[in-house]
Amino acid sequence: MEFVKKRLLISDNNPSIVFNAKKCIDCGLCRMICKSTNGIDVDKHNAEGVAVCVNCGQCSVVCPTGAICERDDVDLVKKAIKTKGKVIVFHTAPAVRVAFGEAFGYSAGDNVEKKMVGLLRKLGADYVFDTTFGADMTVMEEATELVQRLKLNKDLPLFTNCCPAWYKFVEIYYPDLINHITTVRTPVNITSICIKTYFASKLNIDPKNIFVVSITPCTAKKFEILRKEMNSASQYNKDGEYQDTDAVLTVKEVVKWAKSRNLDIKNIADSNFDSMFSRGSGAGVIFGSTGGVMEATLRTAYYFITGKRPPNKFLNFNKVHTYEKVKEARVRIGEYNLKVVVITGLDNARKFLDDVKNGKNHYDILEVMACPSGCVGGAGQPKNINKSAPYRRAMGLLNYDEKLNLRYSFKNPDVIRMYNEFFGYPMSEVSLKVLHTSYKAKQNYLTKE
Ligand code: SF4
Image (cartoon, rainbow, N blue to C red):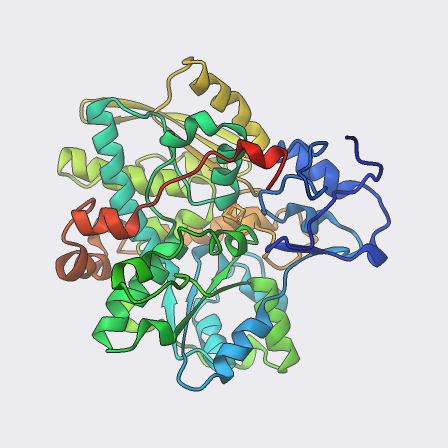
């Protein structure tokens, strides 16, 4: 059935975005971006009468009237803060630190990490951790998985999965290819799991009393945390059924909340992340930019395969072509001559997915992110009329990585401690159980939820 309206039809139950019909002028920009950038079949809808949605929220970015916005979950967090006995733990994604300041007069790309941590404490956080730690854990597991697949020549190319919009897209449109998606959980999920297992046991806190809030640039994470398999900590702890992450707030939501309290980061003292998961490597930080997951994974795969640190300018297509939507490279690691591709915009991935399906044009790794320039251009970042903002945020992350002494996930002391004290080694029995997941073909989504 064709839509009568030009706009997208959005479900009232969509966990990522909400639609206000009173503000809609039926310009159709939302429908256009959904179809052109993310290749969604906007003419198909499910039994509920709403369009297929991968939750990236880019429709809310282009909506000129604010008729489409991200779902506001601040009240959920405020309620938890007021609940006696709850321990409130925030963790913040890599891409957030270089955009947060824009709402307070800083430039896109300025890293305001310490001010942001200070602000979160003022808002009610008992602990603030860095999701970059989780990104480094993801790298350790994913690089190990890559090496295994290369040895077995199985399920290649490996698809990265840090973008929940991307892997939902594969589940819906390319269900035959779900075995290509890495089984490693995303950095947000892994950080939350480590909080509700390792951190809880170290501090002797009942995990059910911990409320974990992930601060992200991303509306798709609001959907991801509700997936029923995102309960790994409770499976491990065997103490009931609860989500690994209790709430996701975007930068825009946190800024609105802070401003309602007359808080401005300019007047807030610097504060550091709390020590248990405070350190992220440069490799983890660049997860926020297109090509970052690929580069980070290859840095560690290089070490696992050759036993040596990769040369400083190992890939280097990341910084040079951040604007480009499809970047291909060949990478030599030991005996392997890898062909890799990095893509933004889900529509741009279709050609590559068709090739994989038809056994044409061999690749070893595919990194795909839904949003422009990767998560730095996520729908939850501050609205910035300057079109170069995502690029400048990406440069902020890439320059930060270049200056850091700690640039490799396998060198991160917090990661080393987690393996020594808890997981043993990457893809150990316990890490496979806790840090890995599986996917489900969702082609039925095109006709019913
Ligand atoms: Fe979320 Fe990043 Fe994917 Fe955008 S690119 S939907 S911000 S994970």
